Length: 410
Image (cartoon, rainbow, N blue to C red):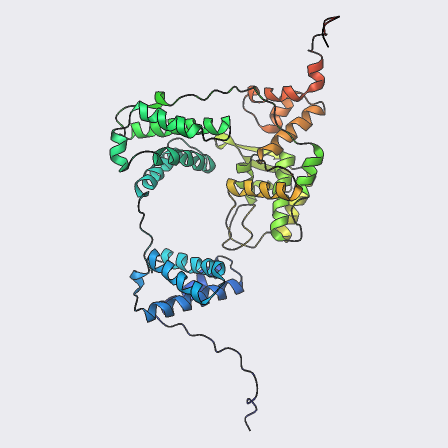
């Protein structure tokens, strides 16, 4: 008697057929090396099998799997499956592995290809010749992209005809769309840098930096916008500590709030920067400077908890990495996203990570520390950068206030 009769059999394991069948082991090995969970690897392999079967039925060769065909396959999956976001995510992983291995063609830039090529050259110049940090290069290239996108196509011909009038017109138009004076200042600074590079590289006929109008704004015309201790406490308690990502986010916020670091400096922290025995942490600041700071107990305990309990095991050397594979170092943009999420959960208006730096400075000053000590904590190279915090020292300012004239209007 066949005892197997009547039993419910599980699904028959799929065997990959079609043009992608030789690369299943490549996909598994690559995703495993990147730290993907077993279930994620299985999902990606299933997606590769479906893609390979679809290609086989349409008699598509590997070199025919261009972006248009990938979108066509996604449209097919939408027709037979409702979980398109999951399908797109798994398919994206498969395509990335295949493209990195040279199995299928990479997308050919269209339209903005000339702009992207110029920005790549400009970014290399900023890193190699100017020595800018990665976050600064990203910001400069982002602003430069706005300027270049406003020029007529083809780009090369437009650059040869570029004159002062067009430069001024583009800047004025984009500056009116900026949400703050500092955003407009960032735009004009980046465009001046771009124009210097274009002239040195021989892409524009004359130096046009003088055609970039200045933005009206004064260094000490506003107060530093710090937070109250209650608001800082609300931000620090906002992340969900039941999840690894929440524990990571809290460690980031505590580091920002207690050390007064910039967002890019937190993103750049490496595991080797923390000296647990000496109780110090090395910070890569502006101008590629590396400075050592004392590691407060609260920051050390929070970092140790994240590193031992929540940080994924991976080859990345950064302290803060993504919560899901492939595990990569967080960027300054990611740090800003962490701050935005905390603001939303704490019921506060969205603000940048720099607000916690201002909050630390104003708290120290109001506790009685002199301005030079505040500058040391914030690692200012110039005391002029610290003078703005004198405006929030109300106790010291009262000694400078003139008495109200007797009998004057009240």
